[in-house]
Image (cartoon, rainbow, N blue to C red; front, side, top):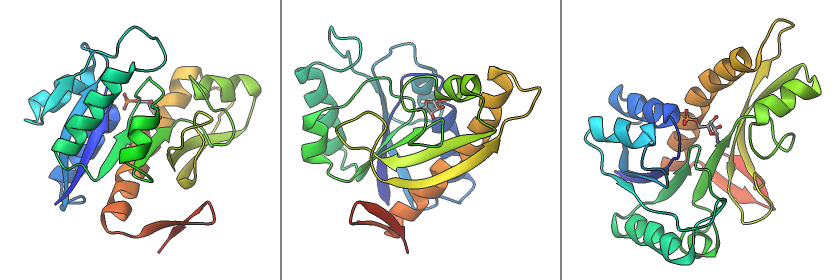
Length: 204
Ligand code: GRF
């Protein structure tokens, strides 16, 4: 089994999508080792609990945008202890730092709700909508330390912006695509079909 660990702070729809794809056999050789969160009220933890998946709230410390050193070490310790081979960020609202990159080099991925490199940062679909782009979407990428939402792009899906869209309708359609491409990328990585060459991702 290829064991992944998911870090999530929010409502957990991507956690649910990955679970659903394991259950329906699409990700038959993938196992979620655990879901970790910096938010005790995260629905992602509740989803994991309901599905019988180990789920742990780890207090992040006193900072707003990142974890303190001890918290970060604790995340890494638990992921290592459970033999996690791929760390999947799914709406984890903290910047991760050195301890992660030392232990999980090229083994951390993230999903972002825009077509990177356009609109990094928070609420990317609102940034895209307000800018007036006609197409946006979502991106799965390897995580690198700096800057935020950078790192080699693995896969993207395009979503058109309609004249009568609102922030909400646009984001709903982006999330539908997220729930397709995140499991897809996890499958490719679990099958060893993705590698990085000269800073770019090649899919075998
Ligand atoms: C997703 O839109 C993802 O792109 C972003 O955070 C959101 C998490 O959504 N990084 P959910 O909690 O999985 O529903």
